[in-house]
Image 1 (cartoon, rainbow, N blue to C red):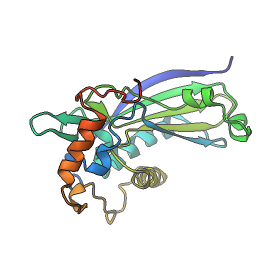
Image 2: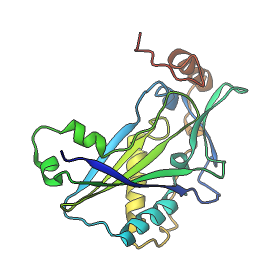
Image 3: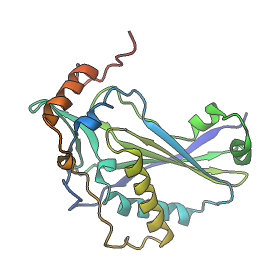
Length: 229
């Protein structure tokens, strides 16, 4: 039966800062905290039926990813609960911060996956990474790059929704792709990113964030599925 085989697992490190505001510690706002109870990351899959993956192109994907992460440091950090301040943050200050990259090979038919009217959920699930979100700290992002033996490449991602919304995530993907297209040349310097939640102006926003935490994840650092009972 066609399937997916993991060939290698590697780790792309986060380059030393400085990083866009607010730096290597990103406190979450009440808009982010409401997603703390999710039990699975948000998974996306990009299919490229006419592409090939050589060792040099895979290396370029990783080196360009390293550069892209320096603009989007929350994707390389860990979602962490600070008990002393009763606060959720994304911490990118540790030297071991970065993104796990799974390299895989598949004998699935990529054209069938694209053209079938009914989505093959089982096949798609094998082409995207995942990570446990049951107890903090947890990673915020992971990548799987799969080469199809019959031709084609897929890029699967897993994102903790507290780290970034959809617009921010796809801006990251566009940045990564742009650096890769330029053969790893550092991205144009006028790219401006900010992950500073202090720009959100709302009365009592810190207390609202803590209320979401108590309601959705009362046992932090353990994250309990409130819908399981």
